[in-house]
Image (cartoon, rainbow, N blue to C red; front, side, top):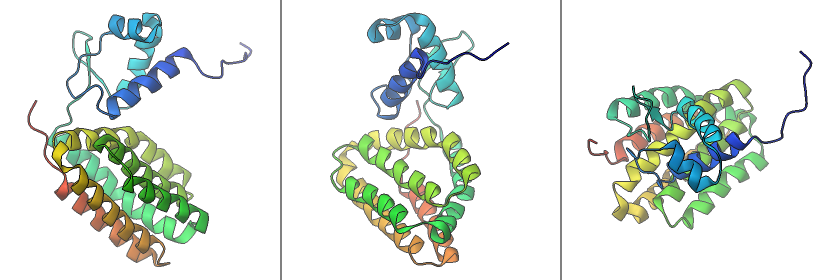
Length: 220
């Protein structure tokens, strides 16, 4: 069968992008039921692209289907968090050491730009987005395409978890912002040191401190 020209962006992809944004920013909190008909009406589309989008988001870990086919935003459990932590413990130190060796001044400036943007962040969801962006830029600076693929699988769940954690501790916006800025400065300094072992160790230390400092989500 010959190939035909594909649409540049499918309707399902557009719906998926909107729903993903609403989920990771907390507009749809943990446990929220996502009904195809209701979403289709709000988005002005048929149910088919909504169904396709929800299937894609399930693969990204942003929604869950129950046995009856109903869809909800997942409430990440301590077990989920430790699974994410275990994977990041493999990714983050390696990303930091490779960025240290392969990163350019332009890469470092782009990483630093996320720290500067965090200074002006007004919401916990915005801090979570910039936090995730900071780490993605480190992975990209390492010029390792396969590591970037690993990070891409985890990206949405990291941002979702950060948002869910922070939203249960809304009064701590200023503290979370300052802690994030300080820890990111330390990690970037280690990456700029030119010493990959130092960068890897700081990446590991940063991740451990990150886990310990996060509030715990109450049982759903």
